[in-house]
Amino acid sequence: MTCQVTIKPSNHVFTVSGDETILDGALREGFFIAYSCRNGACGSCKGKVLEGKVDYGEHDEGALPDSDKQAGYALFCQARPLTDVVVECREINAIKDIPVRTLPCRVQKLERAAPDVMMIQLRLPGSERLQFLAGQYIDILTKSGLRRSLSLANAPHDDAMLQLHLRNYGGPFSQFVFNTLKEKDILRFEGPLGTFFLREDSDKPIILLASGTGFAPIKAIIEHSIHKNIRRPMTLYWGCRVRSDLYLNDLAEGWAREHGIRYIPVLSEARPEDQWTGRGGFVHKAVMDDFPDMSGYQVYACGAPIVIESARRDFSAQCNLPPDEFFCDSFTPATP
Image (cartoon, rainbow, N blue to C red; front, top):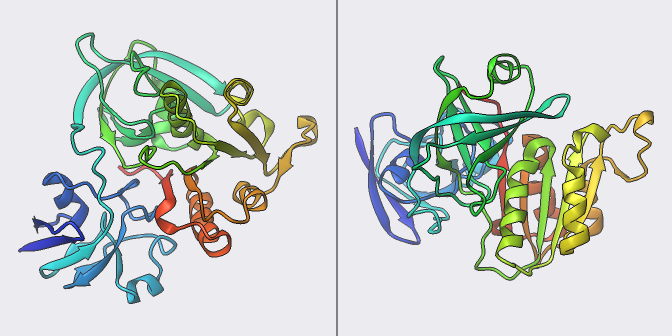
């Protein structure tokens, strides 16, 4: 069955057929709806169904609670139209001219940044460069069929090699990287993907919130901003469990020292041997303590789903952050 989808307020129209989701159809036709995880866990693609009916698909309850469904919302990465539909959502124009490509690459360097964090550098063929926006991600495609999304940690101007940060959670892809992958191995990837990137048409001050290896795309955004001499005030919060998880702490301190980017690391489970005297507890709570009124800010958040959802909910409900000024990339579990 083929259904027609109309996007408001742009009035863009496209068709969805078979098992396609609304997001699949939109991307196929060149209309870029905000999205991140593509598996119903992060909520970035949430929009309103104004007319018609959809199958909501599989999704996390936290990303789309029943109250949202009753209010007419759906996750467009999962929702499949059952009739012609009219939907309301944000479209992203900045990425419309950047092609998604599948490319080979060579593993240039593998570096343990922490006991359970690997920094991977990938080199493209000499004639190739990847066009992308700081904050976007790529999908690594392995011969065994694994597909793993990893954020690009380098800024677009520094594209001689692509840098990725991977935490070892014990899954198949982590085991492959930490135990099997070697320098000079050949991989394939698809990208760039996602709509997590700096909105440069705003002059609002910026709060950057990273948890764990969610630091990777935040690093790209900061380095891009420094390169382009963007003068908007920036405050970076990096939440980790223990001191060793702050695997590029010296780099972040250098940004503070040399470029005036305020930096607040936060440890939730600091050990006695860490001798930690800094901030503790939940990282998004530290942000709320420092910014009780976020009505004039933009927030860019990346990391564990629980951190992103807590920040999205509490910043809006308790700190007056406009919902459309919260941009995120949620590191959801890998899909086969």
